[in-house]
Image (cartoon, rainbow, N blue to C red; front, side, top):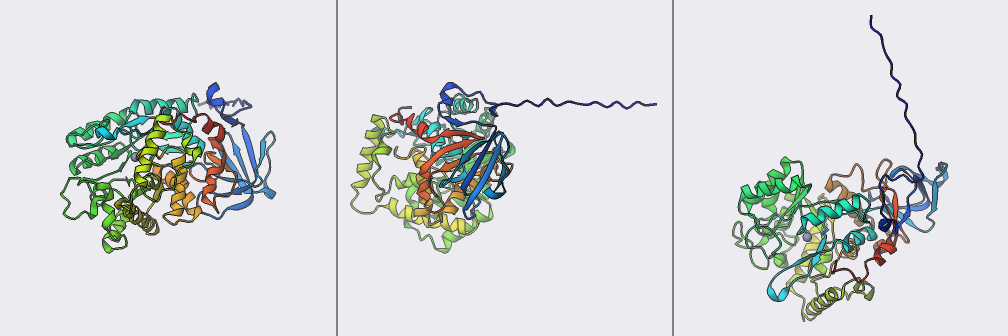
Length: 479
Ligand SMILES: [Zn+2]
């Protein structure tokens, strides 16, 4: 005879005034405005990130860092003990998911022919979060151990910053212009490199200008074997070749695509490759066929217009407010390069490449391709975290011709899909992480209103955007 024993497990329910398990440091606490177990936003203009029309008079309830309820104010049941925030006249949208970010900016030693990158461990994480980026992918590292430390210190609450999806050091080939990059020797070397950095905790990779086909193929296979993702800013390998080999994503729209170079030698990057797009017809069958091929292969493309605008002769003069964030040496460098670009008497090749690229980005999206967006804070030092993110999204509207709601979707839901995080972030839906922006305006009508972000909620914890910005004034470029 068998006896059946029943065990009762008693669950101990603990109530806590704040929900977050993270022990924020005193430094991080300076920027936290809200950290409640239950927060109710009412009277919001809701922009859901899916491209739907903005809705007035909406209530969003967040509980323990997750979105718990979304609907009309009139139907909302406000839970006891909730912190109620009236958003009359303000918009609520998902946190930005930005796909081409870095923890460094350009500090080129142009007179010596070195393109140098300078790590920004203090200013950049804050600028990303301040502008509303709750998730970023670093899209190529020059100081991998610093990137790991920055992520660790944000996740533990020591410093404020976004969730970081780490990209390993660049997969670069021989004759690189960048002294901080490793030059892969052969396919075996690429495989070992991928496995080494994946073991260190990097979850994405990027092939770079000089990598050749066999080496890139070995890298792609090694990355996919570990269920990770690989993007490319390529030159020696064309977009079509990379898509055939199974690359997941391509950076910078179509600017680096070497597919249109007449008599291109296999596995070689010709001179001045960034502007190869200047002499093509973006609406030709050749261009359309390439776009169709990428869409069919489900290759994702990232738009980074802000960094190209920095080379464009029609770029507007930066505001004094913007310049006040730079350290003095970087501000001088930036203004020097800016003056050089402005002194061009006629539109340059860069301008026509930019014009063709924006047409192709829109075509790619219209033909069913998944377009994402990022700031790429490199260039000549004029594109920086935060401001660059805003500008890259504005340019989706101003240059590419997307509607503001489409641009917001590209910067939220599309980014989440590209990262494989769309079940947890990217839109305002029940069950998702409470990564939300409170905006003092209506970016669904005027995209530049994304600059009016007041609070950035990451996992339900609300950070004060203005305080984060203030904390890095005069520091960008120095650290
Ligand atoms: Zn980049």
